[in-house]
Length: 399
Image 1 (cartoon, rainbow, N blue to C red):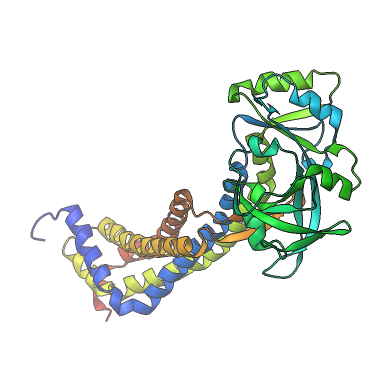
Image 2: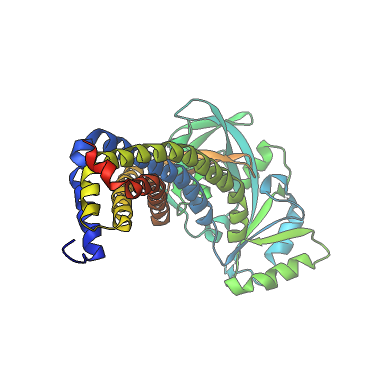
């Protein structure tokens, strides 16, 4: 041996041999890269569904807004109030007020059955009866097509998500509620929140259609500030005339997203794990082929004084490089395939459909690439150890 060789130079030299031999192993390399890319794309794609659903629910609430339900109710579907109770809530301290009155909105929530445009299968669609304060309590609601419904008439406006997802909800369409047809006179946006999955109409008209009398299921309120929530809550929960549950809207919608998000995340990781097992075997095959094709070169270098550690590191570098290429490819594919993809799913808390857009976030992209790196580490470890332990004399005799 002519003299000591810098360890980093050893790693660089052995890595160079491996990377230059990739064209000779194009088939196995491509299989490994695309296998890893598939794992990342599927993982990111499935998790982006959960992220989009959660984002939609989070956009539905504001720090200075609250929702009041009957005590013991987890959703609007199982809640209920008489008109007298909604007036007590509107008069509570902490509620924002305008010259027209308190920013407190008693609302009726029902489910109607409509067909999805894409599959023609029936789905539960939420229909909400509101009064005038609802449009000030939710200050991000805007009519984007058509007009506002006329109070006292069987007319409705629909969210942008519902209009795209369900049959009959396009501008000018009609739906049958009770015994009458209700024309769709407007389409509204709501800052990406769950209201975009709903149909809105005059609460009094909807009460009559369902024989609900003068009852409501929830009260949405705008507070003077986020800090006023505790005062508002304490006033209502200690009032002997009421039996209520008071939540920040952000807290309420976070609870609504829990079940679906957990289900999607669990399924996403299970699918990714199964696919990752296959990708690991693909990476193992590729790296074993790489070591086998370079047996003589590695043995020659070791005979010249290159250490076993340099061989291990160089093989791992090659495996990680291929994994990163696959990971980045899968992440890019997932972004263009899934980001802002519109869909609808069941909200199991309210048993109604929620329309949302998939959200491929930077966090998900990083998570996918981390998975690719882990696959590369596992797939390169054993071939690297094999290359380092191969007896020099035996390796030099191999063709």
